[in-house]
Image (tube, rainbow, N blue to C red; front, side):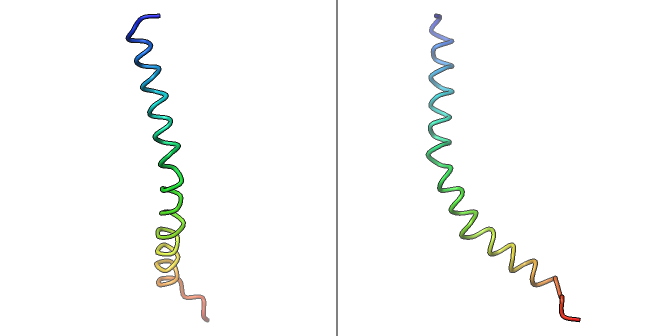
Length: 50
């Protein structure tokens, strides 16, 4: 197996590992900050009191 192909394989595995390690942090930020802010913005323009 050529060195270049091995290097590509190792780099792909490293990138996948980094993504798996960062994924919980991204989910936490999404759940803790983005969803509540989005809900507040939706409630600010949505008036369901008739």
